[in-house]
Length: 255
Image (cartoon, rainbow, N blue to C red):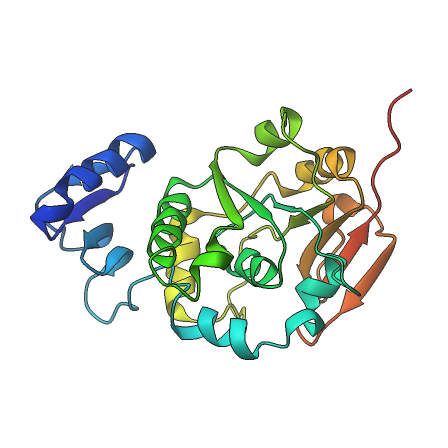
């Protein structure tokens, strides 16, 4: 069922209607008492989980908070995602993030100089990400990073199979899977986000098209003890404390 989108400031009413039309939300003037809803106001777009004792809102913020701290102090090219995508020496590959989510790893890569195209199938995640990108462009120190990021809304399988632009050097996959009951999935707000957006049930099917399109490598982010994507052994892996990155070489071209 489409989420309601409530605009709390008349100045953004037209934009709210545009979002509702583009992403299939239901523009509403009244906040429901329970469930989830999107709220648009002066502070931007946020996903709310309604009711008592619910987690806080989910919003994409590239200007402050965790994203800004990671940009300034996160370890630069020493970060796992940077190593996995081949950022060594002076390399700044063109990266296609086929499971963009809220754009966190894409922002890290763009902050390190990469041009990053992002694919996102969920209308909720895509709308939140679009809003975060637009607000980031208004911040002078972040705008040059955001300028290297571009969002495509649609199913990754379709977009990968029908990609007509420049071939990316690296394709990055970080699929969201159903979490176990005692999972350590960060915070309650992110658990709420996943429950609304849902898992990437077609994740296994992405590996083949990604390897066919990438020029250099496909990097897959996984929980450290999770099975290989599509049960395919990677060329090599980079292990972290809680995650690992499986690296796959491109498929040879069809003769």
